[in-house]
Image (cartoon, rainbow, N blue to C red; front, side):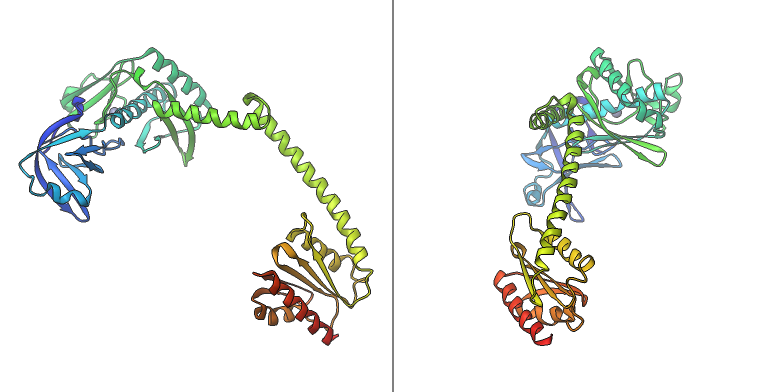
Length: 403
Ligand SMILES: [Zn+2]
């Protein structure tokens, strides 16, 4: 058994190294005493150093605390058994963990008292923490109220006490929110004014030290509700970051953050209207262009698209118009539409003798291109512009020889 001293709020300790062990691919230290809090009860393990070497994880099993070290430090500790080593716990990280943990007790207590929802589990991550409640409908609707009440409670403050009871019998008469999982050495944590709950984690002395809780997301998982929150420094930093981003966007739209959402919806609608209008004009222009183009008498027509607004969609519109609306005017003709900027060709055949899909497929490889399609319409892509034009020349000769 390791003598656990992490509840004593000591952050430096010299302790005897008992064993250096390799477990599968991990390397661990076992000490006589430890101030490192291990992964348990949803709370993250402490970070820190032993003899200046990084402790990457801490686990506990059957009362033994395992301090995980890096492989490169294994040799350093090997042979140091029975000697004193120096433990240093990252105090800032521990305080942050205690803030999150205490915040969980406060949220759980409040939600239990006011909304009769039980806490199912608690999970602390590197960036935020989550609590799962057994029913969530009331909570989602009341989230803003809960946050406001948490804010008021933290402002007023309330002491937190922990007490360990030897047996279950000793708990008689204690107001409990949750039944303990163990029947001896039961550690209870109590926020003044609320029922106690069994817990092995590290806490603050007063809820006032939480400073701020921000619930930033909720998620329904079947009947339960997962509440995501930030606490302490993390909540404050998040506010700063979000305010900065909001102000930046508001400045961009030359408006105030309060009316930013409405402004974005309005601007988005304006944009959609413009796109619609633009499409109408574009279709009109395309129709005129196609009409003029079809007045040419040659059987094989090459049309190069070089303008800024000429994109694959534009080409597609031209192709569809020729195929669907100008069948009579285009009868017997072959069209080679060229999008210069993208080395792309759309070919259209309104001549029964020319199976354009076959022609493209059989010859495109020779010019390092890719393509295919049916006998009415086919397309081809090339890596190099020159290859595309060489292909076009060759295709034109082939077509002319077949009509
Ligand atoms: Zn706790």
